[in-house]
Image (cartoon, rainbow, N blue to C red; front, top):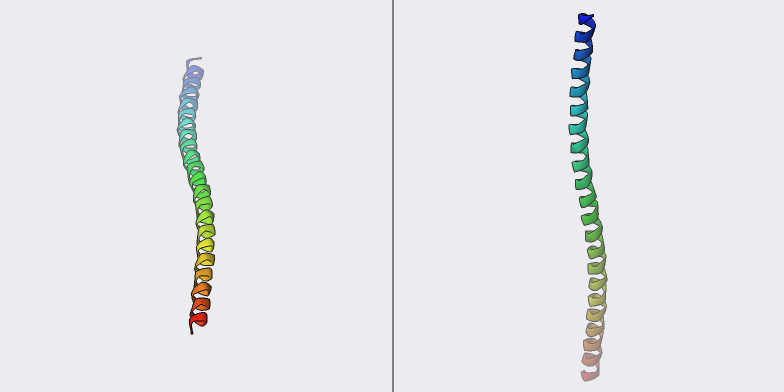
Length: 79
């Protein structure tokens, strides 16, 4: 009978250790998941900022082209 209790105690200790390891792994995975979510959010923000900068660049290029045409027209009129 004592032998069975010893075996049961060993199984319980082993199960407890396994549970503790799995809890630690789950905590690590939650932390990694939070980091991934943060990076995805930052990536999304950077993509939106990049798009805005591209739109601003296109507007400035249009303005510059218009200004260059204006100077070219003024130069032709003055010539």
